[in-house]
Image: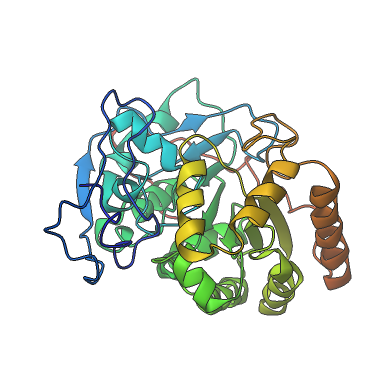
Length: 358
């Protein structure tokens, strides 16, 4: 039976069900045969972390919409369970559901640090900032025990390689002993994602991410340690959290954030159905308004994958959000662009040896 369809959404999870991925050839359908207990409490589902031996670790892209060309994702899948996550469709490539499976079946790339050391040592390697958290959160709950992200940061620090981190996890503070010295050399920057301040809404949208107030505190602690810190208001969801845009920016700026960016909700592949099901379950009275507004920003479609508009949308509503963001960011004194990270300090790791940190 599809998890969450008859007994309600599982406790502590974002998705309301476990629909098949787009590559599946068979479909399952839940039905009540009279033996169930419709009023039973939604059941909880455990998280399973599977060790994965990756073949490579640095991913490259040439997208004009993102400010990096290299990224590392220590994990596939994310226990934070954000219903809107654009990375959910990647689980379909594993013949797993982008729904509950994405939140409960986490693949940990246990050889990430070893691979990174090897790839940085390649004679053809050219240094440019590496982004951590471009797809799934590097500081999701599994990282507390797995410590894969920390291993990656240790290698980057040894090599004086520039990096950025994007996260919703307060666990990033654990690694300030690595991040702060790198930042002092102009090698590190962190973005904390805060789509809204409303605790109750965040609990349903992002059930296992740090609470919004805790993320603001993380910004404060990172900034106090000398780490250039930005706030990412993402995703902005019309009629759900867009009214908090200015409040999020003000709270982040007061905590020490120096740069800011926003992204409008995207609905690629299976995310569209998952968000629709979530709206029906959690916000039924707002469902049509939210979806219609999103379509209006995507040229009448559920999703617009085109470069240049996929992050911010287009049309009057998108222009209104962009204008509000620009006005608030200027009034609060956010920098127009983050300071460029240094690449000239990079030193490749000697084969079979470990360099000293900093």
